[in-house]
Image (tube, rainbow, N blue to C red):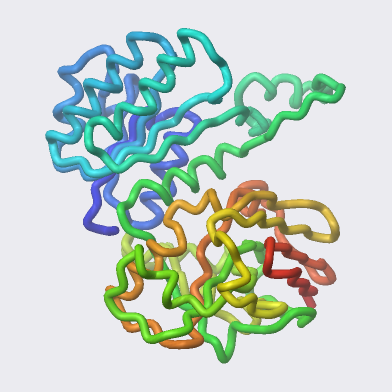
Length: 364
């Protein structure tokens, strides 16, 4: 991943500046460009494209007026130029897919452009991300002490801009990224109490489908990965967020993955292992997490950036996977860190993943 150089367009905007920050915190080289920033980039001025694309391997695309014919033409031309320049992957920030009409056809054409240019691609379709109440049009109402929102039967998903940035950052590098939790120290069972590290006050939750390896696996291809899976279970990938930053280290080491992820009780697991034969499709399982009966995460494994089989392929090319090894495959949006919402003593965390049962633990 550290060999990637990633271009972030709209780098001074709501999601762009967060994507830049998260990539830099991970030690990934970033080229941050925008119309108003020090490194200029303008969708309407193709002469700014070539300098931005130089030595870049992946791009984060934020396009104003997506859905207009000019924007579609710009994305199409840019992604072709990007592919010719050696870019391998693109993440495009898009809009809802249910508008219909000419405008929607233009949106779909823009979404298809990265694939048609030969790039690996991810499209992030956003409905609403204005609940960052410290900015944008809701800020004045919040600061005045009165905020009025429509009432009724309509439902609209609120997506935090930090969550959008996290998903984009996960999708931009070509390969998945893993860390270790030691089985003897980190793994605890269903109903077990969890004692956070003594120095941490920011313990976060992460509901994850976990894959249990059943056979020795070395250099396995994704199309054969299912043959090496014994079953599935649930893992709560607990993270001590305040043990993560290390300002005393070089930029490439500013994230302490062992400090935040590997401590006593950091991986509640269970309540059992569901045999693989009893899971029809591991990429279509609902996943939910509650803290004190308040729903925090509500998603599906069909949202994985790198699916289960891709993760097994990547890991088995790095090392030999052994029977009993467990791979936690990643968590959806809804963790506490973007809102400063952390676990405290007495909190009950409950995770339910379809076909895998329910895992419950108490913060002791």
